[in-house]
Amino acid sequence: MTMLNINFKKNFSKIALSIFSFLLPIFTFAVDPPANCEPGKVCNPISTSTLDAFLRTILVGVIKIGIPVIVLAIVYSGFLFVSASGNSEKLKKAKDAFMYTIIGAAILLGAWALAQVISETVLAL
Image (cartoon, rainbow, N blue to C red):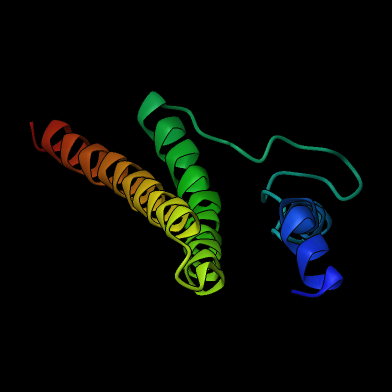
């Protein structure tokens, strides 16, 4: 293994966090401001009047952030599988990373599905 490959493995999380921190403000400022906000002023981006709408807005935000994180975690676990090269310890680490990623994805998407079912049931009553 080359020295560059070893340093990349050690610093992968730092690199990913740096890229995410750089891109997050770009995506945040790309969002259209609320209709009642004057140019040049900071306004509340969550303009809801009910608890249901507020929780829906928060859940949609968590989903929008969570799904790219899940995709990156799956790519990372695939990278761990490829770099294991038959080493049983590294293979176990890769399997654990993939399993925890899938469990996290199931929890995230399950929470969204459960919120949708509860919301539709309450609105139907």
